[in-house]
Image (cartoon, rainbow, N blue to C red; front, side):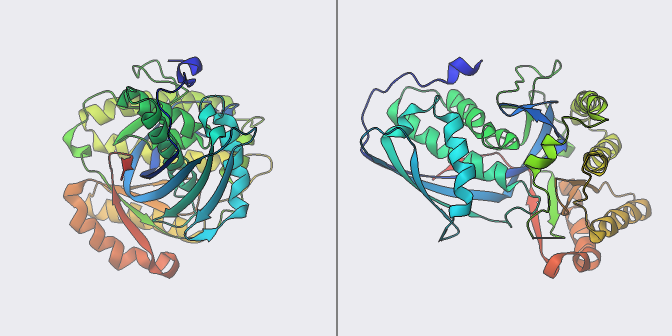
Length: 359
């Protein structure tokens, strides 16, 4: 599919008022994307686990008005009006307007809340933008009742991407690829697709405990970080490496070689942060306790032959990944040894999930 396929083709009915509530999860990339071109096109393909409990729940009330030249909305986040969030959402609406021109005919009131801290490296933009996109696509589904669900999901991912690249991976699950890759059938730079191959049972219901090292807002946003890849001395090599790693991970996910999974996923996490360390200007999002946790995981794995490993998003928090069969042992280790490194002992137990829900 190309961009023209997502241009709205008119309506078969009129809706004066409507309200939709959608819940979409965050996701955690196993092979990272870091660097993009306009409009939100990734420099390399990526793959992620869709999460389950780390989600954004958004309600949008649509009220029909006279057609306007601007898209109007009010935004409430966790019960409070958030004017400082509006510029990013406004830019998102500007980007999607040509694909959803009916938005000019509605006033929107958006209420949104997270199940996890905002702007702390748990991809809040991914869940937030995908939730808005799903609410909009629920309206479009009402306007055009014969639209197929596969198209609704693809367009939701396509729209979400224009707000936050990683949001394209939050519509479905449990494994989603975003970015054109020669070895992933139907993969696209425009939207995420479900991993098309049968995965080994060991990756079913994979666990992710998020250790909240720092719940504050990041010093450097992901948007700024992505832009620093334009003139990065290692950018070309990194994009090539990521695409090669995705091909390797595709094989691993199918054959169940979990030791190779551990090595690749941890290397990807550290490479992401190496790009930050070597950009100009350089910056560090990890905290001292991030490194304490990483070393403790390595020590535990060596002593127990566990299959636990870590990955990092663009922040200080640590995602601890492990098979469901190790859930009891690993969670005992984390509670006994890791909570001292977490802000106020806070952590989130999560697992791979299946994407967006509409209520």
